[in-house]
Length: 211
Image 1 (cartoon, one colour):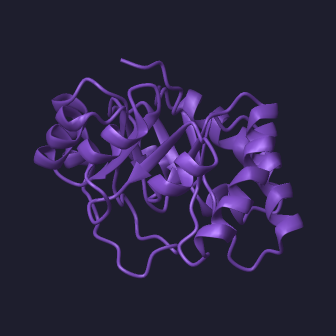
Image 2 (cartoon, rainbow, N blue to C red):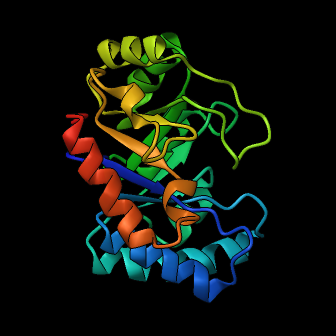
């Protein structure tokens, strides 16, 4: 099993930011301690996605943080990212693994124990489970209970990370659940000071003994 630090999994959202501001916020989040970065772009062309990913990759390499590309195996392969993350409506984990090879990181979004087991057996290295709370980054959100999150943690041997509307004010709900980390978007991306926001999340997670 790969050693992947998913404690503070930072997922990007470039909405309403020009490229300079977006890249600045990405770097500030990494300075604050983000341990894994997922580049999520739903509306860019393949060429635009690759060009942006290459710029983000230069930043993540500076901080020795793996870059995960959301959804797009072709983009991840094209610019040699460390991994890819697939959802339930994206390419199957088994096919992503076949294309990406054994050395790359593959994450999967799951909402049930059955989906979690299937993802693990198909070659996923970690899971994102949620949404724990409604999110502002997706129009349609299916909520996952903390009980289901705990059941999923207990059902697979790979890292399980909580995702969905999580921030400094509400991560207390995860206390006592054996997660490997938390995935956040707006809590860092839209923060007045992304670096301080990341540092604050890590500090509180440690106080709560989330990992």
